[in-house]
Amino acid sequence: MEGRINRIKKQLHAQKYKLTPQREATVRVLLENEEDHLSAEDVYLLVKEKAPEIGLATVYRTLELLTELKVVDKINFGDGVSRYDLRKEGANHFHHHLVCIECGAVDEIQEDLLGEVEKVVERRWHFKVMDHRLTFHGICHRCLEKHESENKNDSNVHYEHEVEKV
Amino acid sequence: MEGRINRIKKQLHAQKYKLTPQREATVRVLLENEEDHLSAEDVYLLVKEKAPEIGLATVYRTLELLTELKVVDKINFGDGVSRYDLRKEGANHFHHHLVCIECGAVDEIQEDLLGEVEKVVERRWHFKVMDHRLTFHGICHRCLEKHESENKNDSNVHYEHEVEKV
DNA sequence: ATTCATGCAAAATCTTTGCACTGAT
DNA sequence: ATCAGTGCAAAGATTTTGCATGAAT
Image (cartoon, rainbow over all chains, first blue to last red; front, side, top):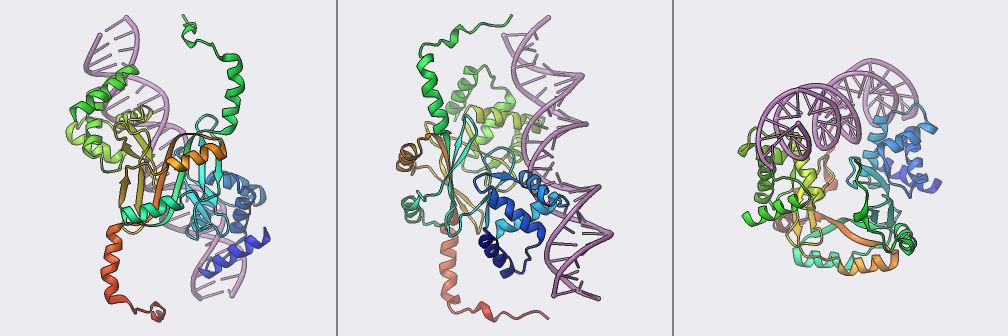
């Protein structure tokens, strides 16, 4: 982990930015919650635990900076907030997401599934692909399993019979 | 076009909603600007031309309703606003987008390029895919062509020689 | 009459900005 | 002394909500 912080530090220096204590605390929070998709507010609250004096505006400014440097990706799943997702080191593509429409869980796919598709796009649409965003909406494996066990007992439930409230 | 409006009307009625004049005006604007990716504000301004008394809140409520009915898709390209994109009739998948990072143009791909990829996701991640969002970021064919003609004259420019300001 | 939808304005959210101040060269 | 970076509060922007009014059965 120290290694990754150091490399981010170098990236900052290369562009004449400093790794201030506030920025470092923010980066650490992102590294420690790599699996999650934190909003700016989420990051702020977590950073506050280590560095209580930090301001929300600084968090926003840091996240913007990290987005510029492509250390994180700013994503949007359709609720009103932007979320920030650390890039895997050496990843030249943005990983994909599986959003469960039942429980809201967001899982990640690291593999690049789009190699062939990108070739098609470059050839057929004459479009130079630099990056991509791919999100699937559907039902996650956990919810699917839950349904299977429920269905053992529910196979002849009739919702039409629901009692109307008077 | 009248046919499409009628079908949308039926979809509304099926869910006990009415096609009020305001809703109809909103739908017409969407149909007339099918190629674009209008924000709520954009829609509001266009609807106002036909029905000047309409309120912005009604436009928001109508767009929300149409999103629920899957007549439109609510999308987000990362600027702060939601955009609304009419679904092609009969399309069971959401079309893809090509966003140019130079000129900002957004082109659409109607073809479904993800059939194989979705099968992989369902098998390998045990995830039931219901819908997807795919956006490529890169350089569109217009900008690429512009570069090619510029490069005829620019092939030996050296940016390192830029003069520093004192 | 009742119910659904509307317009307006106010409120709520999320994000950005202005400004005075601090801390490191 | 300079200058990037910070915290705070205010402003901005987008979207949602409360409520009185209006239209349609």
